[in-house]
Image (tube, rainbow, N blue to C red):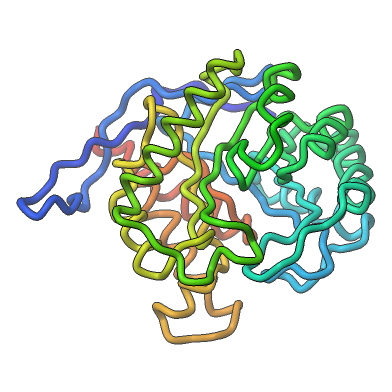
Length: 310
């Protein structure tokens, strides 16, 4: 897969007197993400990460891709639609979900990772909080670890990432998937998540993880109310730690339905695509989505407009 090198993207939007970021395009500054042998330059080319749930109880697709055959077909289709990364997960993290044993998670994802790696040149991410699963997926061909606990859930995870020189997504979650939406509370949601990122970054660097391999995800919907989600998205640039890229995952999430007053998951596509455009202009670098084609198109049009103003 070819990626043109560009000057990466950075936001430092002017603020009004009430500290709300203005709706303006962002200022460019060098920002890269090292994924295995690849260097992604994120100034003019944000990344679309296609979500591939190999689970029977995903909130977004109801287990449509639970079998390995269907999951592999979907992964190939997402790559053909323009996904820059395929994110494979074998354990549902929807609100209220129960954990899955490592053996079962391995059974679900490893064959999918192996087959995708053999057929496409798109980087593969393993969405897991278990070091055992991450190691097997890396051996099967994954080059990114996407950990919803941000490295807190399994004490072996950070050393594994360092050992294997994998890219690492540090995500924030308050509580566990089973409990995270039971009255989530923060004194200052933006500052608390920013501090979490700083702490986990320091831990990762202390264990010799390459700083250029680290990106951050605020975990929209993971232990956050509607108001928390909106505040995090409105103040996105305040979350950036050590000038590293930001991953945002809003695709098909329930808060979109609440905002437009429509309960069906199919009604969340348009607002989710709109956020891809808005958040790219506000500084997001990587977009974790279920509907790849629509978000790829929105992202490229947005970037064309942003670049035309330079």
